[in-house]
Amino acid sequence: MSDYLWDKTGEADEETRRLEELLGGLKFQPRPLELPAAPARNVNTARTTPRSLLSWPRLAVAASLTAALLLGAWLMSAERRTTESDARQLAGTTGAGNGEQAKYQPTMPMKNDAQAAKGGGGDKQSPSSDGPGQLPRASDAAVPVRPRRARLARVESKPRANRGEVAKLKTPGATPERRELIAREFTREEIAAAEKVMYALRLTSEKLSYARRQVQDAGRRETNR
Amino acid sequence: MYNVEATAVDLLQVIGHTTHGAAESAAAAAREESPEAALVEAVRRGDNEAFGRLYATFGRMVHGILLARVPYGEVDDLVQDVFLTALKKIDSLRDAAAFGPWIAMITRNRAMDYHRRSRETTEVTDEVAQTRAEQTESVEVLNLIRGLPEAYREPMILRFVEGMTGPEIAERTGLAPASVRVNIHRGMKMLRHTLGAGKEQ
Image (tube, rainbow over all chains, first blue to last red; front, side):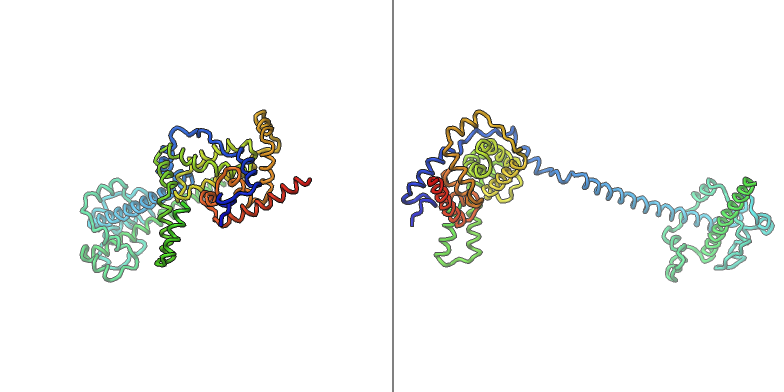
């Protein structure tokens, strides 16, 4: 069935013909299209570097992630340095013998200095006198504080200890297996001496802090008067 | 494109050896081989001549869609705008064979944008005034068509102003052929009624 209105086949009625002629005068008259100079180049550029990838929020997120990664790496390396320093310090202390410690002069007068000098301070910390595994008394903890530079120079001259084993030594809940591993590297006496020295150092540190607080309080009291 | 698709699907259905999936794949194959897709790919490679051919093919449709929505004097400039926008955005067109429906959508959006931006007062230039004087009757009938419901306006203008056939309108705009056919017939019926009422007055 022909349908002129649909596909222009068959007979057309008069009104349809008239409308076609009348409205045909308004039809599209193509004008030359004014194209930009190099449209394809723009299109390709847009395809290879999408603008959305360069947006500020994305850049900010990328910068934050990079900063977090760098910070994490720095923290890990700092932790490693601390462990290494502890290991060196511990290895130096255990291998030094107590006689050497007595050679250094304390930089700050201590409450227990007189006792330490009287009793030969370092001798009381020797494993032979207290036995392995025994903690020293508080009065035995008057370990002379050496200048940092001299201490570091001494540490450098000593052979390196096994870093991993010494780190495990510091772990409070060390399992028997770990202790056995440590024992392969150090003798029981050396380990006990190291523990004693660490304990003495901690005590000394606390005492120094206490003394500093006392001095500060005294200074404040003087100021108030 | 439409004819090729329809022929392929009809042929397969008549033979009776086809399933729905096979018909779809035949239609997809027909779409891939469409000349519009080849032209779009050429434009993407920087071929301006190919874009000129797309302009020649789809210019009437864009003109007709705009004529159904914006004042007659503004249409030519807007046609240029639409094609330049299409050229800029052609990389975002996923299905190269769907260039017609895609540019039709750009055209409708541009017409809406025109109404959003245009002010109430319109300066009437001498040229526009002269055009209106020469084509008074044509513009009057055009205004009558623009007074029809929105669904009828576009196919009626494409049919009577641009001289496109129904199947051609459906193919270029991406509308269903049955819808276009119904809208043209109903629009014509309403226009006749309006014209008859005008004559009686």
